[in-house]
Length: 256
View 1 (spheres, helix red, strand yellow):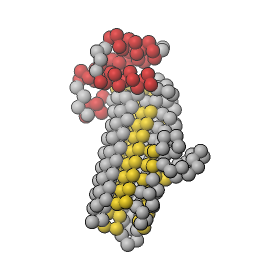
View 2 (tube, rainbow, N blue to C red; view 1 turned 180 degrees about the vertical axis):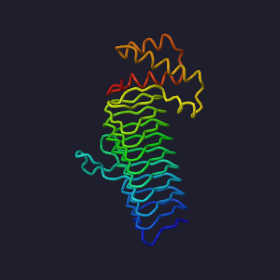
View 3 (cartoon, rainbow, N blue to C red; view 1 turned 90 degrees about the vertical axis):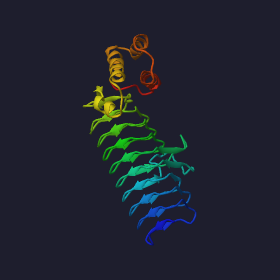
């Protein structure tokens, strides 16, 4: 049975699962779907188009599936998908999609700290930690297990690789490849995310291979030369293949 405060508004067309807690002054609009075991603390707004999984906690002031901040948006029906077991802290805003992709996606087991903004058509993976007041512009992709510190500004269409650590206050308009630390001003490659990889159970051999891959990549004037040498000198494995695929598919180029 759901526990819904008498001071909350739940649209009669909203679909709620079981065992949800809806606090006072929450607003849940029509065309919304909420799974089981979610907690909405006071003052949470769930706008039309939201598709929320199970076991999430939304803190006061969170606003989910908001109208996109995109002048090309003309009211088309789009969605905002939130997975399971996320912690969405105070005043986080997540916009729904536009006609470009149709949906904004936040995966599972993520922590979005206070005042994070996830714009329209972004895709966030699983296990990410996003620091206070960080802002992602439209159509950004964040791969699994990325750590993005506070007050980071990410340009539209960028991609952030998995297992990265981005230092607080960074701002960038190019892609951040996986497994690295990015920081300074302008934002640049600052080495391998050694502590993060060890915490995630990467072996010393895997870490050394990742280090060697980036040593080669960043020692060449042309990215294509670096990729060719990586392929010729390092054995193929999922980590090396991920780096190569990420760099080759980058449309905005990677930070140097």
